[in-house]
Image (cartoon, rainbow, N blue to C red; front, side):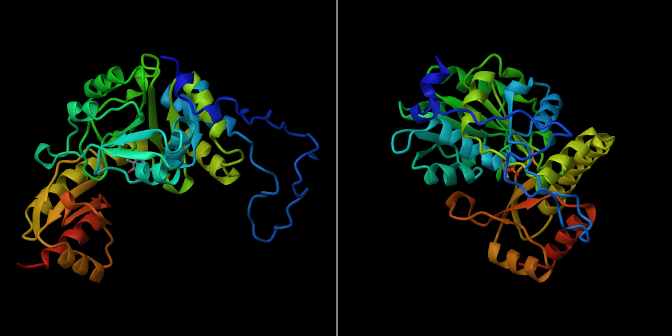
Length: 354
Ligand SMILES: Cc1ncc(COP(=O)(O)O)c(C=O)c1O
């Protein structure tokens, strides 16, 4: 299959917006910026200049971080933006469709709707602990299916899809569609990344984010990782000047620091806390079921969400609500906090008696 055949015709001939990086010491009279920053008393760094059109130095850093070459990666403002970029690159409005297995990350549906792209669903099965059944998915592929989104580990369920199963989907679609593997939570699981497969499957795009395990949600940095050919097409859609200078500086500094070990320790602690919290929740009278999770959260079924939410509100604790999903009635998604926060949650829930 030729990837070119899957790209929206309008995108094929779009020029890629790009520009050489500005070197230090050049007189910049080309971009209608302010020549100086008057905000001296605010004690902030001057931001009168635009950031680079493409965050090239950040891209280089992220490529090293994920061990790919710099033409196999495109950074985005979080993987949320990446979902939109991918849909707009490949899906023709009112013609193509994406295939998704809910309950899952709701931005796949949001951006499909926004772009007038049909949203086909193969629900995950409760009786299968929300693990993806590959035949269910492959049987649902039609001529219209351009993209398949697989979140693994999946939010809000916490279940994972094995690399072997993803390879089966990639094989089944290699002449017709792209498979987007969203690995937002992979650092909290024992799965190995599908990044290693981008050279074996032209129809694979892997999504990664710094928002979860790398504690950088506020910086907004996601990555699309795929063959250079796919990345070239995605680049055409990616907006110019989108990374702000403070975000670029912050991420580059953090990733070059000696704190990566500390971050890895924190990931380990969150995993240990997840298992402890799962155990503690399972012992509570108000809890019906806690699913096993490979993410930094737990999916919990209560006997009554209303009672639980009322109690948590009184204790100023927020948890993730899952709307419009019959299968997950009375379920809440609880993010793993610090040991103190997790204890506060258990304490508040222990006050509920049935
Ligand atoms: C499965 C999944 N993918 C992607 C994201 C988006 O992450 P971000 O846009 O912060 O990179 C989330 C956020 O909760 C998520 O749950």
